[in-house]
Length: 259
Length: 257
Image (cartoon, rainbow over all chains, first blue to last red):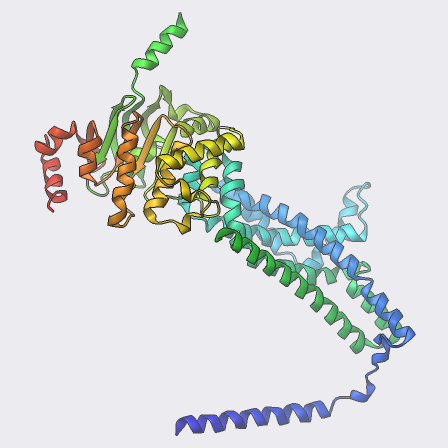
């Protein structure tokens, strides 16, 4: 009885939601859409699309450079966090807490407009300002990911490494990191996706990446909905590719371990 | 003149010497002034109730635990005075077999065995590989060389761990309850390997509850209780007529069945 009742309620709710959605969609201004601005079937549409997608290489170049730097920097910052000495650990804490507290947009402004004032020879172009700001910000998060991953390795592994005479770096390189990387990969993949999205912020200082180009086209065509929809799809595709890459890597590492 | 003197000195000096070694964990004194001396080729079994400091004692010998007071000498070298690289050299000479095996799960059996020889002893890959296969033969599992640790049984894993220590060609082998994590039917295969090892003349310090093994292999039984060495005796005397009351009580408990 109660099963039947809940099934009736379930269908009722469903039909209600569909009706609400329908009545909402009916009020939208579908006729005002002008997909031709980004349509591959018209000459101007093709031009606009090419212009929008031209930003991909800058978005990718900037993100990949920043990610590579931030992974190295993150590992360097993570290591003192694993020291038995509280003073050495403090180096890690101060860096992480400080850098993590700065919004990425603020860091971009600080690096691009602020840093050159420090010294006459410092002249940072938009690309490197973006890379530095993204890498710095990301390194603090990655330091925490690395620290957690390394700390999750069983203490017996460290003792076994010690007992065959491996030193600090030998232990790290041959015993700890190969095991930690498998556990680090999922949160690291998360962070890569996040970084790729955050690169859109660098548009504010004039970097000609995806978001900047979309903004410029919106200003000249007055078609924000269509163009930003394309922009959303561009990020979606990029991120799906990154996700697939990370998953492929995860599978590969797992297969390696349990052949 | 001096070189001859040191040479004779190191020949007659014990391979391992502990003098009044103290180890504390917070307020708990795990070792309360332990002195022991082991000559080259000796086979010492350390036994005693749990929490008596047996594991701490052998973990201090390769400095997995740093002692708080007293002195430890390995091959005449004072451990507390060693640099990091000096300590690495000592550790290469002092093999350790753990209760939980502690094999490297991301490496094959062969890679587990060649890592130390290649990275610490700087052997070539070929030489390390040959060495590893030799020692796998000695622990009777040469056919498992390309498997991963998780594909092996506990007994096989522990034998790989023993082979891993042997690949460092150590002067001293430490065993920290090597059969305590094993299913009963696998204990024998590990003990057999250890008995064979003992006959090669390597210096062994074994923490174990396997009194049959102790009786068969040890030339000295060290009985510990409460962080102190209560009794140090040859196995015959210890098992038939222990000198200490606590030793007697311990044997009674452990040999009941």
